[in-house]
Amino acid sequence: MLTFLNGQMARRKKQKQAEFKTFENCFDRQAALKGRWHEHFGNNNPIYLELGCGKAAFSLEMARRYPGRNFVGIDLKADRLWYAAKLALEQGLNNLALLQINLLTVGEHFADNEVDEIWITFPDPFPKKRQAKHRMINPQFLRLYELILRPGGRFHLKTDNLELFHYTLEILVRQPHLQLCSLSFDLHEDELIAEEAKIKTAYEEQFLAMGKKINYLSWKVNA
View 1 (cartoon, rainbow, N blue to C red):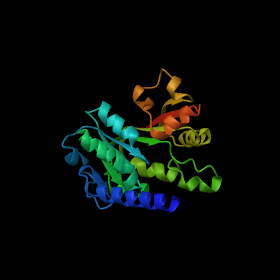
View 2: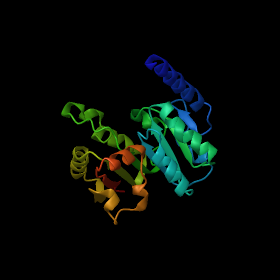
View 3: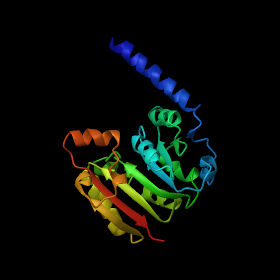
View 4: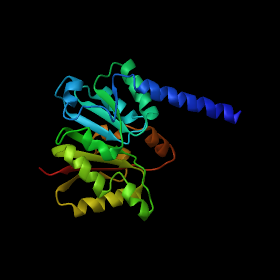
């Protein structure tokens, strides 16, 4: 029985990956949209990225609530992105696109200053010191993100992991061109944080159900 179920899951995964390639709101590493995302969206509205978005529930809800903004959810796995892609098409959300790439190549898909804001939602904390190079918040990755972000553009981080939160704060302290904008150790009980930050991801729903507090941090690149 287990073998049968595993086989079904594998087939379904391949089906989603194949469908992803046919969806008009989905792109992969072969997409030639660098510097042309406004052409894809058909407007000059600001562009928001969600990095490591998984099933992109956060980007999907943001697209629903803010039709005057454009959103791009980015993840390495097409079968994850498939969920939001399909719902966006069914609901006519033309302001959401999904991009399947390795984050190390993000500069190949967005021009300098093309992006207005970047959201990093519940990244893998890679808790061991020797794993620090894999963290989505490490200085190497941040430099890549900063290149595509417009001057004055903002980063946002949401995490349940306090160690990763402190690690990020330490990076900001050492980078004089980065300015802390807001901080919360209990996002959903903090009335000073903008409501858009409280839109929940799938992981976030799970963490809250377990009684965990959500940490939130935003900062900007000084012009």
